Length: 229
Image (cartoon, rainbow, N blue to C red; front, side, top):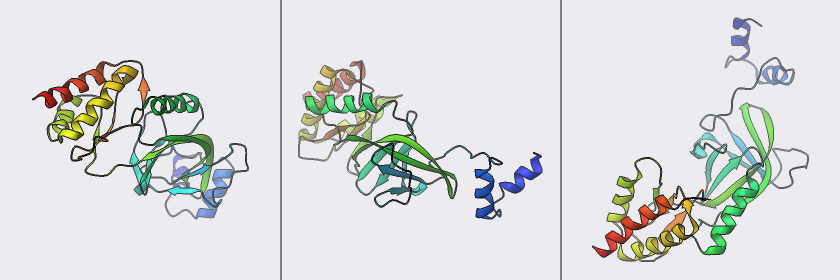
């Protein structure tokens, strides 16, 4: 197929019905899914049921709902007060479920996260869609005054600013949770902190993994130093 013909097929002026027929016939290959450009739908339930993106209860995410791209999943989307991290396969379902359960069973704040399997519909070339058997991690979404923190890159400066402005009770909550994170060897700790609260429920962890306590220990030292000062 010549370049000119491909350009004509992919033109914004191409009739939707004609483009759909060409996609179905394999004349045009769907472009890669992009959460900042394409819609996506989440249908929680059995992986083996007949696909139906218009089923009652299916959640539609638009690019405006996109909250974060992801290296290990399709991305993170927000609906109301919940965050949805979607995965286009079930390969990591058991591991992530077990990681969340370990946090829950040991009292580590885990943003009320849960996992569920279901069907995912991506719309690279609307209205044509692909059906993926995947799963979602569903957790609480935190707005200001909650602040995002991460243990990646030059994390110390941002984390120190959050800690430096925190109330005494907020610091006590961070210290308690970070001591537990060290005990559980939470690697790459990240999540949200409310530095303004008078409650000790001031920190929530997301994307929890285990293996090394190095960063959690460094965060704990910053918080403990602030408390002792």
